[in-house]
Image 1 (cartoon, rainbow, N blue to C red):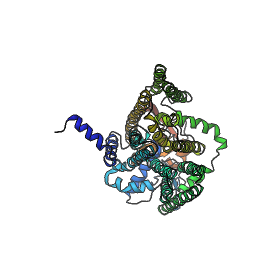
Image 2 (image 1 turned 180 degrees about the vertical axis):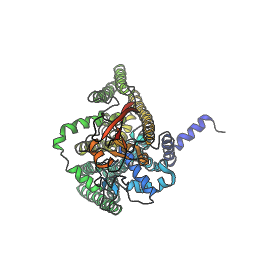
Image 3 (image 1 turned 90 degrees about the vertical axis):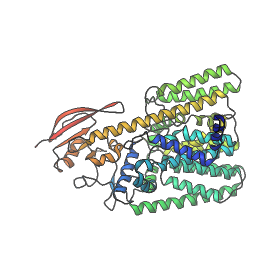
Image 4 (image 1 turned 90 degrees about the horizontal axis):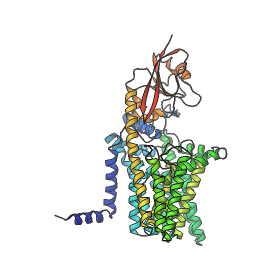
Length: 552
């Protein structure tokens, strides 16, 4: 029988082999996913996707039709339970804007339900971890590579997104893997398969995540520029063309798939983003840029952002002091950084929207002292991708997200570089950044478990209500419930709609005798009388529920 030391040594050796390391990471994801509810999710978009795939499986089809119980009275879908669900030219009600992941998840969901379908986002996070390992190995050594692998896989937002049926982990994994290939082009002889492969990976990511356009522009542009600086202009031109060819091939293949299956086109979504009023939204975009980089769980702009910036600043000061052998002062700076980091976490569970707060090792990628041409390319590409994403990202949802979800790919790249920088760093810096990364990830696991359980409990309670229909004043909220919302009638209020118009257009023509209003203040509704108001609890908040009866 092997000794404890012998067994531990064998485990350590096994975990430096890609196969066993990958299986171990997937096993951790699988175990953690068991603690989350299958009827609650990380956000409203996931709920809508799960509803769609549930209906696809129930109907034994790949067409993303979620239906609409009130189509007879509301053919435009102004009050559809899933906000922004529209009928396509075949009369099907489509909510999702991406199909590849749902098509891939269809057989998994059909065979093992939601938990088995989570294998896809888990694979995305696994790909991110391996791509980060490859980047760190290229710029430093194998030890740094494995450090990057475990930090990205177990102590970054990639773990959180592995536990939710969303495309973020897959999109980030594909983008980071593409940058790993581009780095190989920069470091060695240019081989056509590398830029073509990078283009194919970026095209696959773009079929799921719109921010890929910004990331691809920065990553490919930075690589080509670096090649030109190194007087490899021919390689830069060929690489750029092959990346574009690969990207375009996958992009148009996905557009054909969406057209055939009747989904909303990613082309239309990208065009709509390009037409947005960026100049008019600059103040809002600047605010949301700060939140998605520095926002903490304190959740009160600008105080939470100030804490995030103070944390990073203290890390930088500590790094500078320890390099100057000012150990005592360096310890004080580390302690200050730890305090700035812990304060928001002890304030209660919630989203941590800041990328550099949820991925603190990435700070080492920016602040670390050991610069090289490889690192300059990686950091420059990542920061360029971050800036472009801030300019073009959708606005209005900076706070309710984890780790800057549009910034996952550049943050993973910075984390890989940071892992390489931690090797020669002072032990205080290593322990601080890795400890904070582990702490915030555990905080995120607890948040997701609590959030999914609370959402499941609320919609289970709503399913037992006797009112003929429930009208949600928050148009996004019903999307949170996933397939549970199909168990009864719901309506949601969107732009230019009111409870009164929903009652006039749908409730009364449908012959319903009563309805409930979820959220908002009780108000006079023509043709209806308020019976009572009760309070529902969700995520530590009280949500009013108003019950009305239809009058003659």
